[in-house]
Image (cartoon, rainbow, N blue to C red; front, side):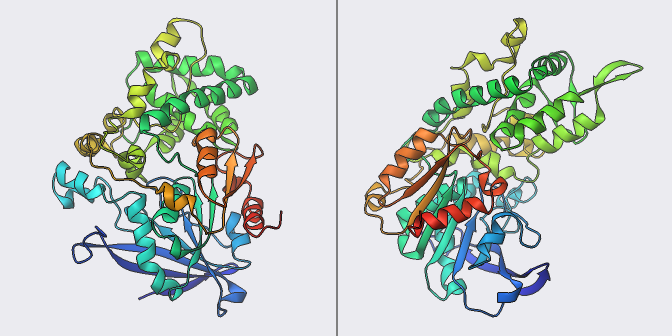
Length: 433
């Protein structure tokens, strides 16, 4: 049963679907998916083409818009939009420390989560499409990991697509996780260097916070243990359009004087715990590296292993000298399952996923080379999250794909640059530019 309600300028309808956990076993266990249908208020009764939105991540539910915000405003000019919570996220059978024990122990949990990659998400989309569109193909808009899913869609079920739009989400078709992170650490260093060039006062502030953490055991109000490595991971912010500015504002108010001496301010700690906690998206930490698994090689904590090849990211060595502290970026590490209370019960499950060797391919080069679906992709120059060289190599491998390479926006361009980004991609696939 679906229910409809209104927000300013839009009519929303809650949609629920039942799909197989394992699409290779359609008669087996099933899970529930949730999606929110959105249509412009003045077009609620009209026949409109459908646009399916696939959120970035992995592990995040679809964005909860209020009214016609961001890119949704442009989309609603001509589409009925389906905001899908991908399996395991949001309201789609969420996978968390609270729910996963229902599966059994760590081994059962890991086997269960092996069904939560892009190929299963694409099969979910194809399973619900006939019910949503009556069988007609739809336009898919994939942001970041949602773009990875869109390339899998073009590989596995292109017949379900009318048009494919990708923003900051062209994956390397063949790279192992090690290759992804070897390309990532130098990009992250460039972003950190650019931040310090903009805010040179943050060099000393970051070093001071790191030195404090090396000599104090800091536990945040939610139980998160703030280590130096955890502090460095705040560099994730530098991949968004306003991230450098937000990081600067965070660092400038880190300390307060107390009767016991200088301490990290409560306000700083509260902000940091909200930025670092995986409580709202634990699936991101659990399956992040598995999105690069496509063969018999385990991912084996690739980001942690590869980091050792870049000693400039070692905080202790940095602080022993006079170099600026380097922040890190979009990387998942085993220590996160010790520091974060939302992840601690899932440590063994994460280890089993990291050791898994039965990953199957997510992309089909032959089908992509013969692609007939109109495709356009926004590629952000020096994107911190997705390597530009990898993205452009993939763009060249997909027949007919048109790219818009820009340094006007960072990885979150679909949010910060909306509705211009969506408008540009639609113009590209319609041969209007």
